[in-house]
Amino acid sequence: MVRLVELAGWRRLAITGLCLATWRLLMQIPVLGLSPQYLANRLDAINDNGLLYAVGSSGPFTSDSIGALGLSPYINAVIVMSLLHVVSRRVQKIENSREGRRQLQVGTRALAAAVALGSAYGWTVLMQSASALPSHMDWFLRLAICLQLAGGTMFLI
Image (tube, rainbow, N blue to C red):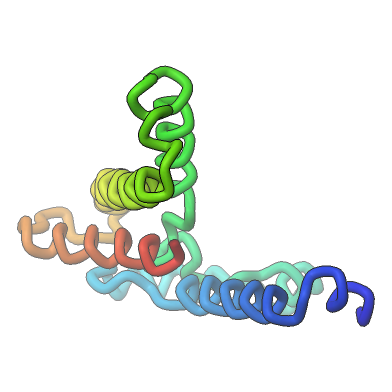
């Protein structure tokens, strides 16, 4: 353990631990707007007396939490920006300066936010078909849920 701290540095390990704790916390907060019957069914379906549950469980609402999208929108944005770097000479020129790299990082985060909002909309449609969300949702509730999910992803980023 001492060798690990020497190699990685205690600050990096502390930041990594804090990020993991934050991620686990976001996975425990369910999205507002889920139907009470759906939440009750999820809680009733838990088999919490097994060793597998004790070791590997992440909670009953992991797929219904504000962190459900995880970092996948950001990873997708990084892949798109990397491919853009390969294809576009202009992006290659921009990347040569320090200010240009900062602009590309901001662009990657903006693209990640847009991808997160699109994924969140798809998530609401999926949860609506699974009867987790009301069948007749107005645009405000859908927007609020999408902003919760995208906000959870952006907080993780």
